[in-house]
Amino acid sequence: MPTESERRWAAGAHLASIPGMALGLGFVGPLLVLWLRSRGSLTVRRHAVAAVNFNITVGLVGLASLITTASLARRGDDSGPDWASGATAAIIVLLTVYWFLFTVRAAMTARYGERCHYPLALPILRV
Image (cartoon, rainbow, N blue to C red; front, top):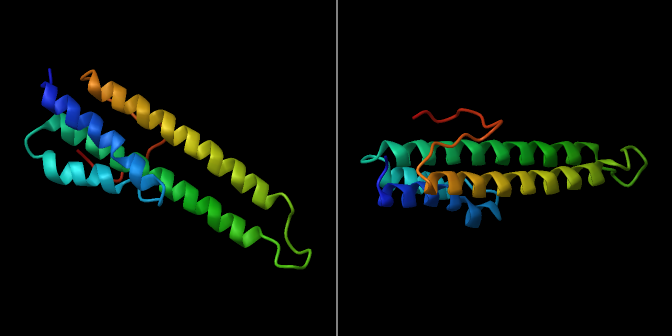
């Protein structure tokens, strides 16, 4: 069973992504927690790695969505589809809601001392 301090840092690893996500750099906060606190605790390391992987995955999906919109966007002539900007806005809104809900869920899971699993996260870093 993880200690109270480990559970607090594990939850903090997930919540540390919230300030950075406004700039699309949600992985920086969890990466700092990984760098500062993961040596002494496998629990903190697991949660920080999961948070980094999830935030990098969400960032890549958002970036791919924006690149797709830019390539489909109208250039002043009627060469692009009218629905591209709306579809991208919908994807970004859904992605933001998905990111926020799973980040809060993972923080609560960490606070209870349980292991978390983000669905659809690319395994970029390993424990």
